[in-house]
View 1 (cartoon, one colour):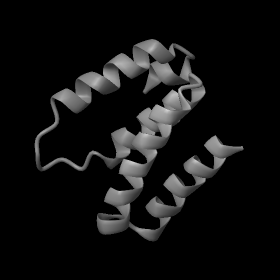
View 2 (cartoon, one colour; view 1 turned 90 degrees about the horizontal axis):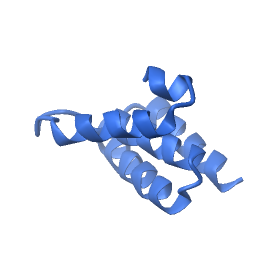
View 3 (tube, helix red, strand yellow; view 1 turned 90 degrees about the vertical axis):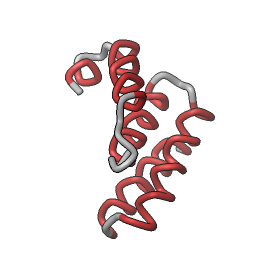
View 4 (cartoon, one colour; view 1 turned 120 degrees about the horizontal axis):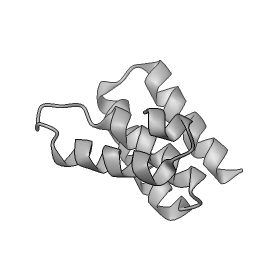
Length: 81
């Protein structure tokens, strides 16, 4: 979201949390989980970041494309550097 790109990470995180609270059960949460995981890594909250990225990976391994799986694997790898 735009707050993330502007560097307002706390506002971006707040918006993502609102989105997660209001998602329908039929929604695919992996995109939001991925974004939250990357955002938390930017904030230095690596344990929480890892949890969201692993949730993303699990969803995408079951329902995603190989490209989506590779994207989250890349995010995990970048976090571990």
